[in-house]
Amino acid sequence: MFLFYPEISHNLALRFFSIGLSIPILKQILLRQYDTSSYEKPQSLFGLNFKNPVGLAAGFDKDGKYIDLVSKLGFGFIEIGTVTPKPQAGNPTPRLFRLKKDKALINRMGFNNDGVDALVERLKKYKKNGVIIGGNIGKNKTTPNDEAYLDYLICFEKLHALVDYFVVNVSSPNTPGLRDLQQVDSLKTILEPLVLHKLQTASKKPILLKIAPDMALEDLSDVLALLQSLNIDGIIATNTTIDRSNLQTTSSTIESIGNGGLSGEPLFEKSDDIIQHIQKETNGKLPIIGVGGIHSARSAQSKFNKGASLVQLYTGFIYEGPQVIKQILKSLK
Image (tube, rainbow, N blue to C red; front, side, top):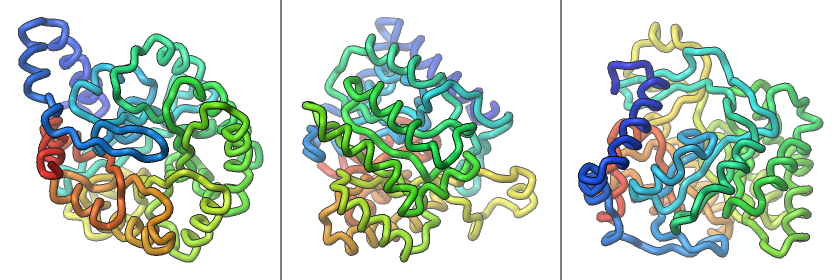
């Protein structure tokens, strides 16, 4: 798969796996290979019951096209999105790059998705199979920041009956000005309407915030204080980084790639440090989903040791393959 451009490989892998599941004998082999039922480690968080604490991070299945397929790989929860109110094509290609020496990716996808209405229709047809589904929501590129709260509210209202929890994404580096929304005043404007809507509904879906790993700790402390004052249910640490330090890939290659968010092993320590800071700052009262640089059972365990209650994979899943899920769960068991 690494012989093809990353986006092509992504689509091919999912199509091949879909074909495999449509052939009875191959389906038996595949499901047996990726079966994690004997290693399940139930976890209750946000009022939800996760069959295991290993999830798929947002960005892998932006449009909810492969939920049923991916759920067969052993994940305890799957986060779809980032979804925006209107469809958008995202940034020009190429926009996804492998740094093989670093076991990393750089992406500048730009919230490419079919829009929230298309996602709603897919989710209506999805038959739940015990896997928790999260909805990662964002704003359209053309929406000014002072009107961003409306985009988040639209997605929240339309998906409310169809997902188990929500993630407010203001931390992607690939939508111009989006990270400015991590400032406390802007963040409060976005979160308050969502909290109000949540309180007015019978099924109170959890709300989490996904943060960048590049925030100054003083700014992060202000954000944590806001989240606790609004009774936000949890935090995801972290999104991709714009930092390019300590990479094995040559600087000329990095320069040729250009802008984008870096994920994978180089993000591991930065993510761990943020998780540990959140844990100490909130005295463990704000649940954390740890993501960033998880490529093995050992790196997943580090996230738990620093204070995460759940973890998510993306780049590690690409480089190590689906078997990494079972390895992590076997280690935890």
